[in-house]
Image 1 (tube, rainbow, N blue to C red):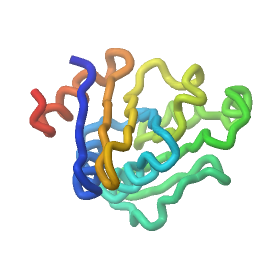
Image 2: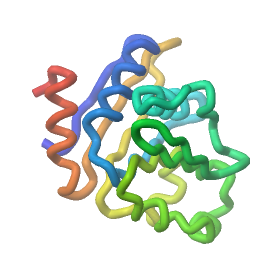
Image 3: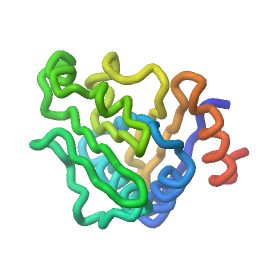
Length: 160
């Protein structure tokens, strides 16, 4: 199985998912985050960063900077495609330099806006608001490289 659904009842459950992703995804993974404004993309990035030894208060949406690097036990490369006009503008940022990194995770918010520019092998997380604090996370391995990571996440979540 290369996909599963994780339902988070509150921010504590979202933080737990972030911690699991930080622990179980291999270095060099690109994570495409998709969801509406306010769905929780940045909150999930904060949870992943916190689990990687980075003060979550330092992690803000890089909407105006576009790319942020955070160093902890793992490096987080945080990219936000929200304000980009098109895929050409995204490519001008040199994202392949980040996608080729092997020392951390690359997290792309609003990834659906630049989907054709993303690595063929990636994790995709679609976030849906289901309540005030509750969220549904549709997590999928795009390509074969991350199928094992999805299996580890399913086992962690008890969705085997």
